[in-house]
Length: 165
Image (cartoon, rainbow, N blue to C red; front, side):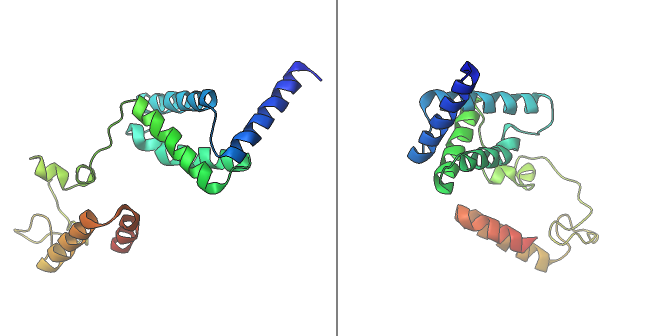
């Protein structure tokens, strides 16, 4: 057996052991985090993603998929993928914005005015003298939805947001 074939066999056995344990070895984990960090930084610097968080979902998915194909249980693979991506982001000093900072209304809170021509809720043209909503109904519905989103648990946010759209 050639040295390269022996190395491939050794790596395959190591991956199987990692999968059975549900965790990566320190060296392998550090190498993966370094690779993720390098890709995230490169894509951000090249302008292919707007923030360092832009590849968080696809990278977590790819890591989870790779681990599952190596024999990992889905929950272990997902948890490990989440930890690896989080470690890469932390090593880049990426600071996640608050939920409020991610909303269009944040610019108004910061003093930046948005010139609107359409209702923020239903996208109907704004009547004369209206600056964000076309009617009291849209204003009340939107503010109620926003209040529910702010109070919601993380697991419920996607369900609430999907109903709004």
